[in-house]
Image: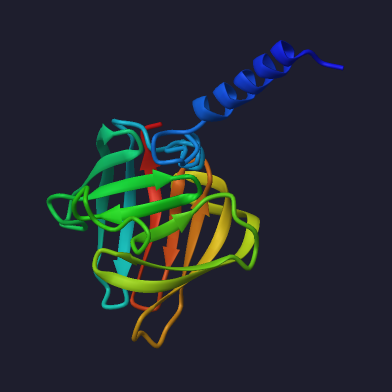
Length: 192
């Protein structure tokens, strides 16, 4: 039989352990790991893509991580006016959201997920366009001008669009290729 003092000490230890593992809102401290699924989101990283449209135009554009403005939130820049002047990517666990301000709703702006199974689906808004996403395949080898990458194959159907486009997403590099009916782009180079 345990003495009352030992029981009290054990109860105190359990209570201290449970309280120290959460924050003041009752959410566990690691419930939203801002870096777990997107290791390529590092200040200074850049991707150069070659873009072509069905109208025959072709050019290069660059996307870069300017700075981490708070844990898990990164200011993103691009050439060719791809994004608004103020644009951020926010990571939370498996979700990557595109934001026009740091106060945008993180749950409706999800445009990528990491480490999700084939058949996973979600809806999200990116650059003002809402789409439905689905993971079609995993571990597919994709060759671009920048080299070969192992990718998830993700379909995207924008609301109101008649077509479904395909995204090839590397868990270590990000988007390496986008294949659509109106335009395509692929990774030409990266600096990491």
